[in-house]
Amino acid sequence: MQELFSRRKYPKLWALTDRMNRWNKAPTARAKRRLQGQVQGLVNWIVALLLLPIAFITPESPLLAIIGALCLGIGVVELWRYLPKTLGILSLLAGVFFLMAALGDPAEIAVLVYLAAQYPIFDRRSGLPVRP
Image 1 (cartoon, helix red, strand yellow):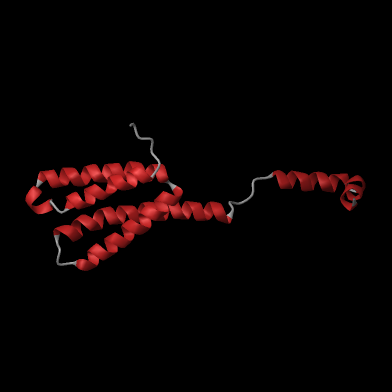
Image 2: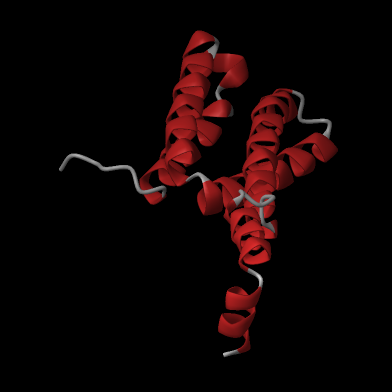
C-alpha cells in the first residue's frame, strides 16, 4: 500500500528505480561455483590423463599413481556433476588413446589397457544415448 502511494507521489524516482532493476546483475554465487567446478573438473581430468600413464610405465613412483588417481576421481566427479556429456566424450577419447598406446607397444604399455577399460564405464554412466 505504501509503495503505491509512493509511486504516485514520486513517479520519476520510481521510473529510475524500475529502470535500474532491469539491468543485468552480476553473476550469482551458484553460477560462479558452476564455472569453477567445470574448470576444476577439466583440469583435474587432464592432469590425471597425463600422470596415470607415466605412473604405470614407471612403477617405482607410487606417488604419481596416487596423485593421478585422486585427480581422476575428483575430475570425474566434477565433470559428472557439471558436464556429463563432455565427460562421456572425453572418456571415449581417453579409452581410444590408451588402447592405441597399448597396441603400439604391447610389452611395455600393456598396463594401459586397464586404464582404457575404465573410461567406457564413465561414458555409459554419463548419459550419452547408446544404440541397442
